[in-house]
Length: 155
Ligand code: HEC
Image 1 (cartoon, rainbow, N blue to C red):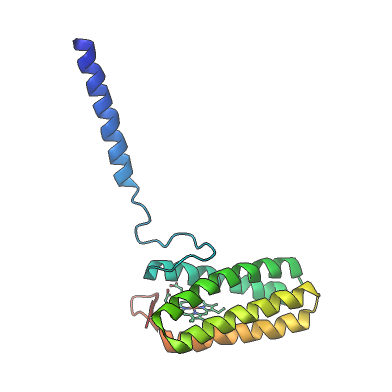
Image 2: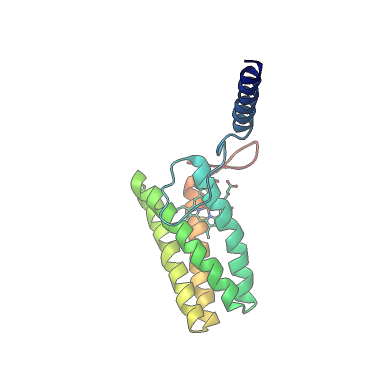
């Protein structure tokens, strides 16, 4: 009987420890999950996760095209195309026409960048990249609001 009781209390302790540690690591609280191809952007956090990665990759793309590093540029452009397709889906679902168009132009420009890089035409890659950069400006001016406490919000 004693042994049964102690087995029970041991199991209870294990169960308690598991539930406590599960609470200590909330799933995705405040964080968008890592963007995948075709993912539906369901929250502001998902949106921000996309833009943060786009911002980072845009720097890589810029530098690698200017430095003539076609492989690195292609990798960045390919990933950015995935991200912008999700961004396009977000605005299309909201039926916000100018933002949908800007996102579509970003996708088309990124395809242009990849095509130019595939034929080693760095000048054409740079031209397409400049078109891409124009879409950032257009959409941010219309739909990005800077918060007084830092960071950005969708408007
Ligand atoms: C279709 C509209 C649209 C396009 C195109 C777009 N953005 Fe954004 N971006 C937004 C909106 C809206 C926000 C504000 C919401 C947010 O920060 O999540 C934003 C925020 C950002 C942020 C701040 C992320 C954060 O929350 O810290 C970065 C960085 C960024 N964009 C980079 C870029 C770059 C680089 C491009 C072009 C290659 C680009 N964006 C193109 C709409 C767009």
